[in-house]
Length: 178
Ligand code: 5GP
Ligand code: MG
Image 1 (spheres, rainbow, N blue to C red):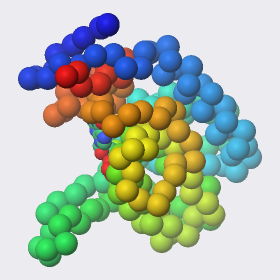
Image 2 (image 1 turned 60 degrees about the vertical axis):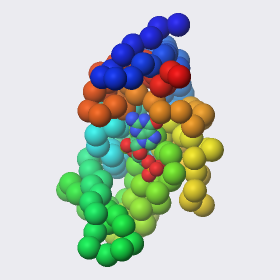
Image 3 (image 1 turned 180 degrees about the horizontal axis):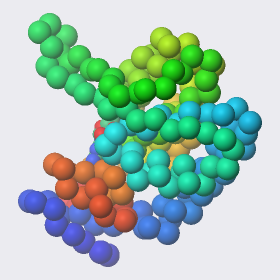
Image 4 (image 1 turned 90 degrees about the vertical axis):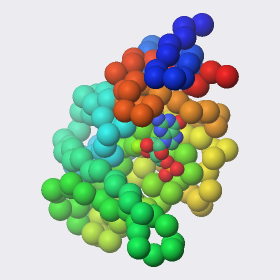
């Protein structure tokens, strides 16, 4: 079992490079078929999804575009807690077929927020693709349309996902070891 250390924590391999790549090829083929001829716009949620997005996008053969967004959260002045904000999309999504590419769905809060925000701009359809999905952590009435891997409720790093900024460059996905 390959183990690594990032800062103060120890991690072990959970999903290998070849498993990741094989699954992404399957997902990309499915998306390519489902959106054939629709000129889809892929919307990548930075930072975590950048590697996943690159590996999906290069396997799409139908005409398509890509755009990037960032979701920021900060403590609001109201007692309701966090206010989030979507930044960065330059394309007009009205009437478009949009596919959100995300690294991981945990509570589902980010996913539901993003779907609601994008729907305000009247896309023809919005679908949600995530490399990783933690069903046990979900607290929103939401299911991603495309899932790479369902994973247990562990903290994961690698292949775009970070621990305190580090670990995104790892080619495998690691889980926190106890
Ligand atoms: P949600 O809004 O679904 O609770 O969380 C989504 C965001 O939380 C992800 O985009 C990701 O940034 C972060 N996140 C959730 N689980 C993990 C994890 O296991 N590892 C890392 N590195 N980030 C996670
Ligand atoms: Mg993310």
